[in-house]
Amino acid sequence: MVKIRYTKNGVREDSDRTIVPTYVPEHAMKALDVTALPEAEQERLAGLYKEYEEYYHVAATQIFNFEDWLSHTQGDSSDHELKWRTFVMENTEFIG
Image (cartoon, rainbow, N blue to C red; front, side):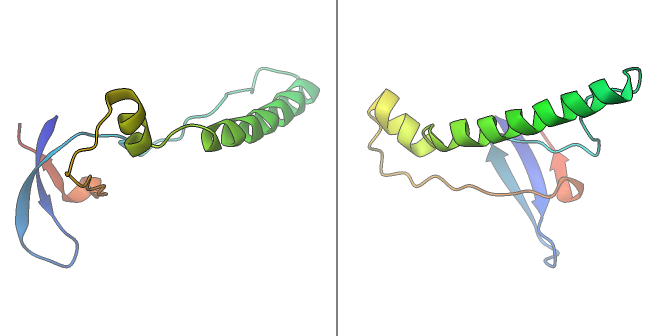
């Protein structure tokens, strides 16, 4: 868990939150660097990665979302409604 102070866009008021980060974007690109490979191998790997992306998307549609996973693995029938939020990094201060 992480404690943050967040300023919502368009609202000049801060709120302190306790969150469980699930995805933290970075200002960088992850990529396969194929510079040193011959052009034919670059193209082959690009095609194979495209196939992998298709495989990944199909597999991702067949897994439980977090709420369903909780229910199946924990028997969680809690009355708490999960609140999924997106926090803009430039408006977020880590405080704890």
